[in-house]
Image 1: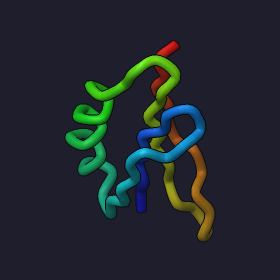
Image 2 (image 1 turned 90 degrees about the vertical axis):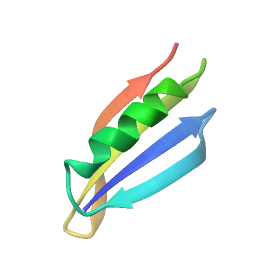
Image 3 (image 1 turned 30 degrees about the horizontal axis):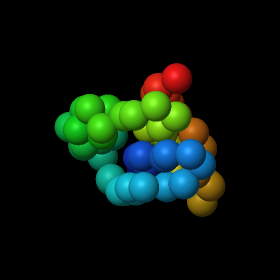
Image 4 (image 1 turned 180 degrees about the horizontal axis):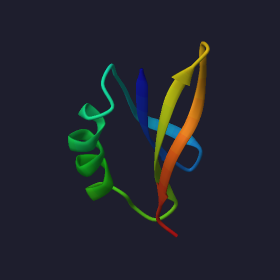
Length: 60
């Protein structure tokens, strides 16, 4: 399972979970267009019942 979040100033603006890794690509491309200053898109993978950060894009 995978989860993707749009975070602005340490506040989760949007969060969505996916069963398949391939499904996050379309959604992440939409979120990447929404990035503003001090925001980031973070992708997590669920391993052993814990969400582990898998990737991150950030505007500075």
